[in-house]
Amino acid sequence: MNDLISNFIGLFSESAPYLLGGLLLAGVIRLLIPDKWIQKVLGKDSSVVTAALIGTPLPLCSCSVIPAAMGIRRAGASKASTASFMVATPETGVDSIGVTLALMGPIMAIARPIAAISSAIVAGKLVRWWDVETPPKQEAVKSCCKKGNITPQQSVWGKARAVVQYGYGKLLSDFMGWLLVGLFFAALIQTFVPDTFLTQYGSGVFAMVLVILVSIPMYICATASTPIAAGLMLSGISPGAALVFMLAGPATNIATLMVVKNELGTRSLAGYLCGVIFTALFMGLMFDALLEYFDITIAVSMGEHSEMTSMLYSLAAVILASLIAFQYGKKIKAYFESAKLKHLNT
Image 1 (tube, rainbow, N blue to C red):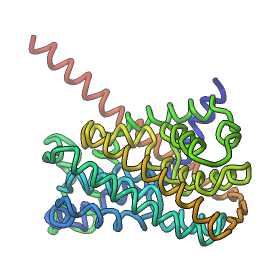
Image 2 (image 1 turned 180 degrees about the horizontal axis):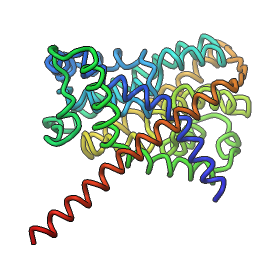
Image 3 (image 1 turned 120 degrees about the vertical axis):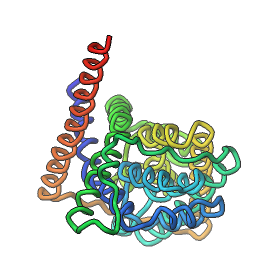
């Protein structure tokens, strides 16, 4: 039980700074990018490629991409382009590419974004083919976004306040429950799945399928997945299987899948999962085959986080926990006020 709680806190702390950054980015997107531009660029089915290219360099993990993607979707982006963005963005970014280059070398650093873009495009296309486009969910009239709408007439302070109200208010309130559930199940996996479960199978299709099955319920960021993948390679996993882990892990954690189902629907979730899984499997097999054909070896080197970095993660976790507690406090207060009003009316 102590290990489960410790792992949950660790995962929460690991996600906190990226989530806070993603919430802020969602508010900034609402400020800087007009809804009409998003509808024009990402509202078409053909925009899945554009969404993948836009999402690839962004330094957002599987956690912080949730509010950003929700903001894009609710601004008018199509289901297909939203799915493409949600796959490409957490699978890789300028930060994770840098870590990949440092730990695994230039070949893996090149292969990773190529594979991420490919899986994002495939997932977006499958969503387009399998699902029917519907209007995005509208903001509630009484939400904090109502008070925080961003207009050109607002002052700098007013715009900053609206960014905070939207990112750390409405969006956080919308998905924080799903996020906590996803982190809890990820902590269960981390606690009860042994470290040797993956490494004992080495390489090949079976190893990659196992990697996919284990990585789907796990919560892990693209940057954080890199040293784990490097460690798996040092333990005997092939580079292709490590690539599969870095693709499937960040894009298919439970928290993300729950949000995809809630925002896009069940059929879109099926297309999302199939696109990520089958593309990751294909890319992993092809990567191993190319390395063997050209007789290339991927050298792995491991590094450590500084104490200052750990302190910043802990601080971010405290801030995020406070924001979530504040939002739940508002929900509880609203519930009791509503119950009291109903009681008085009866």
